[in-house]
Amino acid sequence: MFDWINILNEYKQKYEPLALVTVTKVLGSAPCVVGSRMIVLTTDKVHGTVGGGKMEFQVIDKALEILNNNKIEVVTYTLGPEYEQCCGGKVEILIEPMNKLPELFLFGAGHIGVEISNLLVGTPFQVNLIDSRKDWFINLELDAAINICEVQVEDFKTFSDVVRWGDNCYVLVLTHDHTIDFDIIAMAIPKKTKYLGLIGSKTKAVRFNNMLINEMAIAEGMKNVVCPIGLKIGGSTPKEIAISVVAELLQVHYSSTNK
Image: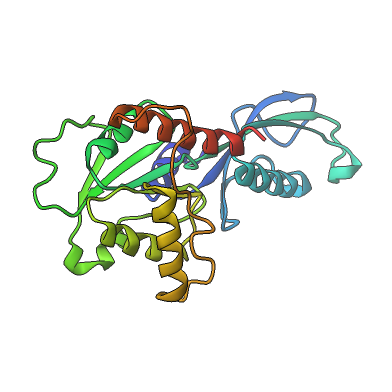
């Protein structure tokens, strides 16, 4: 049996999405046993086997579909002519997407940023709190589960380097400086994200939209940026605003996983 636990851990460290395929039930004759496992990656690379043959090729295709949908499924295969098998057994397989949890990159460790970060602890979100102010994190009260990162405005490339862009990437911009806010938004728009949000009023959104189009030649402007952020539930304190933003993030996450 291949060392699937260490392989899973290796890909977890690299944040690489995969599907874990496990045979959970075998009835009659089949080319696999309960507990047979296979790991399928988006690159079509495969570790392990669930019996080989045409059925395995179909399982791989199904695993990639489930990985894309990010929902656990149980599928059943009856081994007959359709799978070029004559054994006639039945195989039940559990397919679990992994390393597909949402990851938030929150720029700005002010009052609202800290509240959002702490509120998200215990949810599916992995939180990365980023700030450019020197030694800013020293006196902040943050949960140990939150990743903190101090970046340098002088080397603006570091802002992009700390983000793992992609389908599971959520970006919130709440810095202490509107100029930095604008630069981060302009940097993030061409990247792949699940959610890109900017704190501010509708007036700020219109101003940034005009600047993006006229000064940065970004034709879409603020079209794909959420601003203002948060559900309209009322309240104006940092904690109340944070609750509304966290509710919106969870709504976006679960609306895609519960389809």
